[in-house]
Image 1 (cartoon, rainbow, N blue to C red):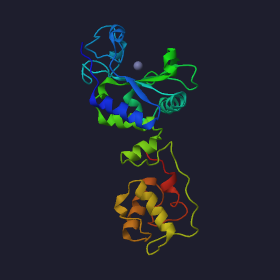
Image 2 (image 1 turned 180 degrees about the horizontal axis):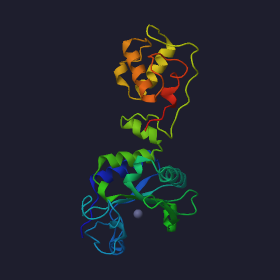
Image 3 (image 1 turned 120 degrees about the horizontal axis):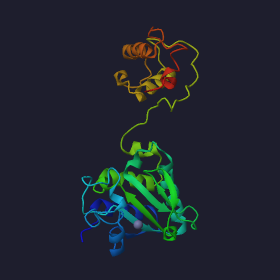
Image 4 (image 1 turned 45 degrees about the vertical axis):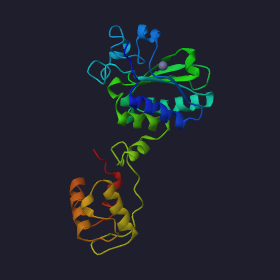
Length: 260
Ligand SMILES: [Zn+2]
């Protein structure tokens, strides 16, 4: 029989044990019973037919190694079980969470009494056997069982990080989108133009840098030629009248104009 635990899944299990004091990995590679029934604790090679865990895209032949298991069982006390399950549910419940791509499903409990299965791929919650009140069963998409990126995403979810926190850890700054508009700070009360300086200029520059207008240079609070040029191009982009000055109409746009 040929099912192995990849180095990345072992690393994930070790990282998991560091996050939750009571966590002990109780298995990655399945036993003879698993080999008969299939599932993510056995490889594709070990159960090539009738195996529900090699059907979905990213789990089929050609995705990741054929001789590797893709699930981890982690035993924990009730406190850690409920905390960990809730953190994974946050990923389950947020359909734009980028960490979801690495998760097929997980079994756990939020009250220490009832076990459930959260199928992230299908977005369905169902029953699970009662042993999942004391251990979480976590399934990684088979394509990613040798991926360090997947390990990082899983550990971020297990730590309870927000999506923004996860992305920040990868060096990605979240900028506003149409569904994530910010409230503009109050208009400073006078038109800002070339030659001006001060905190209001700096605030506006900072926001434009966050939106990716790097031709500004630094947010130095000085309204110089580079800032004026950015103001003109941004006014064009927003289809307001182009005068190179930050008046009451132009002031809030970096916060309110949706990014596509
Ligand atoms: Zn399991």
